[in-house]
Image (cartoon, rainbow, N blue to C red; front, side, top):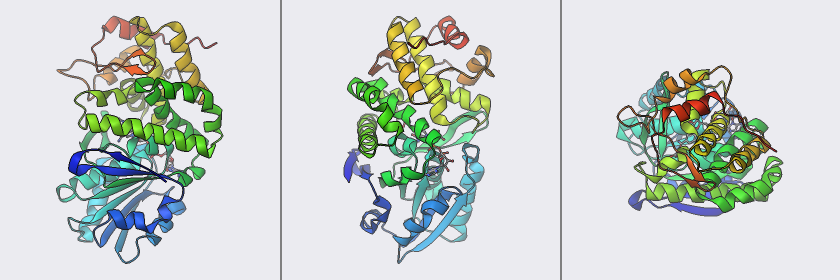
Length: 362
Ligand code: NAD
Ligand code: GLY
C-alpha cells in the first residue's frame, strides 16, 4: 500500500492506494471515531462491495442509502434522500458518512456530509478509475442543476481516501477509458514526463496491467494532492485541473446528464482546448495531433457531438464557475505539460474552434 498526504494543515488527510484495502478493518478504525456510520452507494456498486465494507465496520450502527445509478441522479433530490435517512435514524454530528462508488456518489455523498448538521466526517472509497485519480481527492463536492453541472456544492475534505485498486477489476472498459482522460489531463497540465510515460504505457493501461495502473493512480493523485495543497479553494493553480472541462461540461449539460460519460466529454474538451491553444500560437500542429492521438488510443472521443453547434456551446459555456463578471474564461495549454491559468479569449478564435476542431492524427 502507498500512502500520499493531502497537506491542508489540520484538515490534512491520507490517500491510501493499493489492493484489497476495503478488507482492512484497521484503516476504517483509524478514521472512524463514532458508533454511527452511513454508507452511500448505488445499485450497481452495492451488490459488488457493500457487504465487504459493512463486514469491516463491526460493532457500529451501520445504515445504508442505495441510490439508482447515473449522473442524472446527482441531484438535490438524491441529497435529500440521504438527509431524510440521517434524520430518521437520528444520526448525530459525529456520525461518519462513507461514499462507496464513482464520482457521482463521491460528489453527492460528500455534499450531503458537508451540509448535514453543517458538516459531518466522511470517507471516500472511490470505485472507478476517474474517482481514484481525481474526484475523491481535494474536497470538491456538488450536485448538478438542470442549468449547469456541479453548480450547487461545497469545498469539504474527507477524513481519508481508500483507493482500493482491486475494485477496478469489475469496472467496465468504457469507464476505465473515461478515467484515463483525467489521468492524461495531469500530464498535459503540469507533468510532461508523465505524459510521455502514458504514451508508452497506454496499451498496458488499457489491458489493466496492475503495475502500470497503480503507478498511473499514484502519479495522478500525487499531482492532484500538490495542486490542492497549494490552492484548496481554486483561487489560482487548481483551476488548471479544469482543462477541457468548460467545453466538457457544456457537452454534458447540452446532451443531457448521462448521455456521455464525464471523462469522454473532458477528452473532447481537452482536444478543443488544444485546438484553441494552437490558434493562439502556443501549440503547433504536431502537439495537437500528439494529444488527440493519445486520447484516441485511450478509446476516447476527440471531436464534439454533431448535435451541438457553436452558438449552443457558447450559451452553455456561459454557465461556468471560472467565469468572472459574466466573462468566459478558459484553461489552455502553453505547451504539453504546462497549462495557463483561466484566461479570456477572443470570441472569434473560440468560435473558430467550436466550428471546426478537426485533428489530423498521423
Ligand atoms: P460514476 O460515478 O457514474 O461511475 C461510472 C459507472 O461505473 C457507474 O455506472 C457506476 O455504477 C459504475 N461503477 C462504479 N464503480 C464500479 C466498479 N468498481 N465496478 C463496476 N461498476 C462500477 O462516474 P465517474 O466517472 O466515476 O464520476 C463522474 C462524476 O465525477 C461526474 O459527476 C463528475 O462531475 C465528477 N467529478 C468530480 C470531481 C471532483 O473533483 N469532485 C472531479 C472529476 C469528476
Ligand atoms: N477536478 C477538478 C478539481 O478537483 O479541482
